[in-house]
Image 1 (cartoon, rainbow, N blue to C red):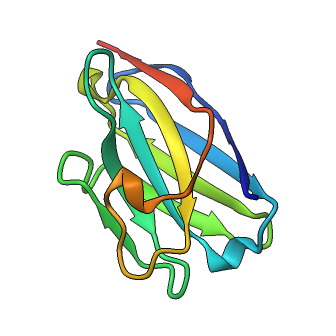
Image 2 (image 1 turned 180 degrees about the vertical axis):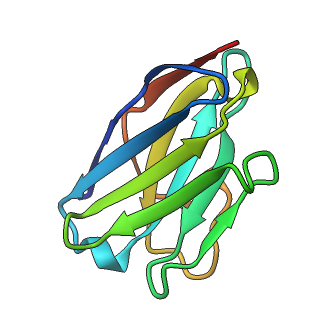
Amino acid sequence: QVRLVEFGGGLVQAGDSLRLSCAASGRTFSTDTMGWFRQAPGKEREFVGTIRRNDGSTYYADSVKGRFTISRDNAKTTVYLQMNSPNTEDTAVYYCAATQWLGTPVRDYQYTNWGQGTQVTVSS
């Protein structure tokens, strides 16, 4: 069973930067495609981005494209979400997730393992 733990959430001012980390254990990390999702109060959980297991290619939601970057360190079994120029609409609980789904999974049902989430609050 994969265990995922997110770190790095907190309060950040709009326009600053914040990096989230997600440490994985319990399965060979390099075999998992990793994703980031978020859920704002009163809203459904939404896809942020994903990094594929085979080639490390990334895919992002339009709302964060060009501002957020996902990377992974297989040796450290950690995936990162670099948030640049966040705005107040990025305020949410951020979750990392793991899957062995082939292709580019962008739906939450395509992921089998989830972290507990970390709160990110962007102030104006």
